[in-house]
Length: 410
Image (cartoon, rainbow, N blue to C red):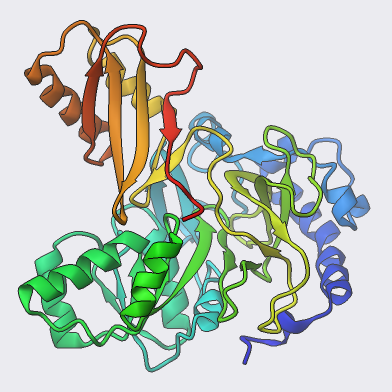
């Protein structure tokens, strides 16, 4: 069973329908969004009728949005609707501001939830953060569009969440992959009943095979959802669990990192997306995420392009416990402590949880310094991490300030 007939179109029908819209879409965006007009200056919208022509347009890098918005607040001239016409405005780390327009399922996330088996009789325990950032709202909108009831749990307050789960009996979980295990383990320790949860939609970090198997052994079906604050839904898993199926509302390309040039099918590259959002369109947004196209179509009958899922970052930015950590943040921690020279944030896994340790070169190995650096790390990144002081000239001289040493194959 599928969400609608769009999911089972032939690739030729899909391409014809999408690129039949593109010229008019680009013309309206250029007319109504001065930021896009400047970015796309000189292009002929009527000529963009194929993937090959689309690939000739310049990419818009997500990493550039902060500066573009700062120069022309609030959205850098990239929105086609004025701020007062929007439903919500969010602020993600950077800061980067993202709008949410009015209307049902504005982020187009219902399709992915339907593929994961979510239906109108489900009660969804949503542990994504509702404060400032849009993640929880993307999930909330899609689940409610299907008729689900949503518990706006947010992150943290585990004991209170377990009380809500035992009393309200949610059938589904949404949040980062790791936190579900924390809830289930804590429920056993506290003697709380969390057995009502039978399915989950996770995002904000990789779902490692070992963790997926652990959930399966516990009787839970867990599916992954991939989206961004700028583009909404990008791809999702179905019951086939063979890659992630690209959302029907976007055009997805895989390009060579640092360029806008598409790579051959199967080659790992950077995810670039074009959305047709009526309030906040994105044209060849370079997300910074790595993935690759899988050949063929899904055994579930959905015929759109599939990707392998999230395979890391094209730059040094990485996700830890569902939160982006940027090289600029690591540099800011170092600036607070002049006694440090070279620093390197190392991200690993401990069991089924993300861990990060800031390694810093210094001649001062005082324990008090470790504590103050750890506090700075938490203040800047909003995440707890360890600190390891090492001798000068110990860390590699390779320009890398974030090293993601997690094994994504196991």
